[in-house]
Structures are given as C-alpha cells and as structure tokens.
Image (tube, rainbow, N blue to C red; front, side, top):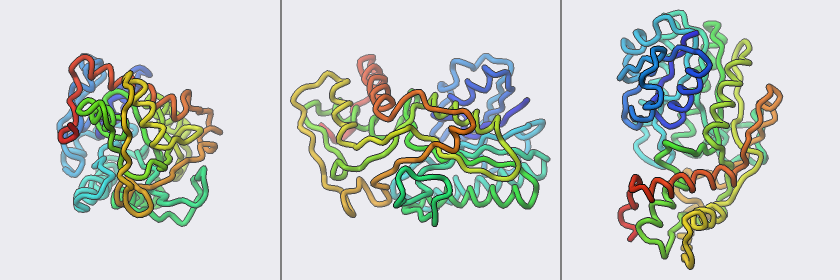
Length: 325
C-alpha cells in the first residue's frame, strides 16, 4: 500500500504520516512548505518508507509525478486561514488545487481520495449537534465555501469517473505542531501580558475541539471503511466548549492569578470576526457506527493543548504575541 499525503508536513498531515508509516504504509508527502515544516516530520525523516517532495498541488506535473504507483490520496493541503483574507487564496489553494489533484488522479488511474474538509461547510446550522445530512449548507466564510466546493468536486468525480471519496468535516483540531487557533493565541497573548487577556467576541462562542490523535484515528477509520461513491463524516468530540471557558483553562494551565479577561464584544452578534461561526457542535454518530470514538472531550483537548504550549513557552520555544504587551 502506498499513499500520497498532500500537506503532509503540516499540523494534521504530519501526524497522519506518522500513523500511516506505523501501519506499514509507504508514504509520499507533497508539500510546498508555505505553512508546513520539515521538522514536523523529524521523527520519521530516516524512514525508507517515506519520500518527501517539495511541490505545489496546483502544479499538475508535480502532482502527476507524486502519484506514480500510489493507491490512495489523503488531501490535506489547503489555505488554512478561516478569517477574512484574500478570497483568491482560497480559490487557488483549495478549489484549484483540488481540481488539479483530481485531474492528475484521473489520468494516473488513482481512484481513492480522503479529503480534509471542515465543519465550516455547515455555516450557521440551526440543528446542534449537526448531522452530515443537515441542509441546505450555507457557509458564512470564503474558507467554508471553498471546502464545500472541493467536496462537490470530489463527489462529482466519484459519480463520473468511478472514484471513491471521503470528506472529513473536522471540528477544531488541536495538539502539538499546530501554530494557529484560539489556544495558541491565548498563550502567546499571556506571554506578552500575563495580567490581561483580550478575547475576540463576547465570550459565548461555543465550539467542539478534538485532539489531533483522535482526528487522525478518525481519518484512518474512514479510509479503512471506505465504500463506493462519496461519503462525508463529521470528526469532532462529544461536546462543545465556550471560548470563555477556554480562556479560564489557558490561564489555569499557565499558573496565572488575577488575570483580567477583556471581551471585545466582537462583530455581528458577538462573533470573533466576520465569518466566525458562533456555535458549532457536530454529531459524530455516523462515524461512530464505523467503530470510531474520540478518547477526549473538548475540555480535555483544550487543556492538553494549553499544557503543551505553556511547556514550549517555558523552554523558550514560543514567542509572545506582538502588540499584546
């Protein structure tokens, strides 16, 4: 078995690469290293079963070469920034990249793809926990729209070209090697100013968080149980947690006392930013029927992530956030 992992030097991708290698799967990593890092793969860099290629998924020729003798593609390469930015970036690195990959797969005869999608495809779901058959899907960010577009492309290839496809709608994944997200930001803010923590929004934003090892286990389970056609699976924890509680946990894990928590009030009803889904809680029953269950709930995941970042801070490996002093 040989797998191509696009974005394999990134946060989730590098953990997935380690897991696949442990299962005896040969792995080819294709990464342009715009956000991924080679040191994320340090623990497996000497493996004869790993090949790392520096290349962009939008480069058709590079993708064709990476796909040689590959059985399955795990497509994690993407622009990971959810907040408002240049929409061309989401089109280029999410939609165009996925189309280029699918065309290269079609011409190389590779038929199986596991895609890293996002809970943001649901937009502001009125049903919580949200099941996979919820609709209509109305993303409120360009990022979410781009992920939904990628799902649609993959679905079309499963029906038109007899691919098999799985989309994994991840909640907020946290853990070692992640260099973005609310826990990471809070620790860096407190490093800059241990007396005051500024929180975007009104503090009531509530979302599911999942530890990276649980997310990787879900990914492997969905791949192993892949059937014909296209399926989407939610990947989250059994609960959700408000950002106000996340702030408390990060402060607790840092051993800080008397910290003033200041909420900015946010935009559009208390969101942290435009496009921020205020309440997200995914139903995970569909994937649970395949035999997967997360080991940790949202609070566990947040606490372990906070502990990890504070440890990095004590070791001098985490910089304070500029402008927060």
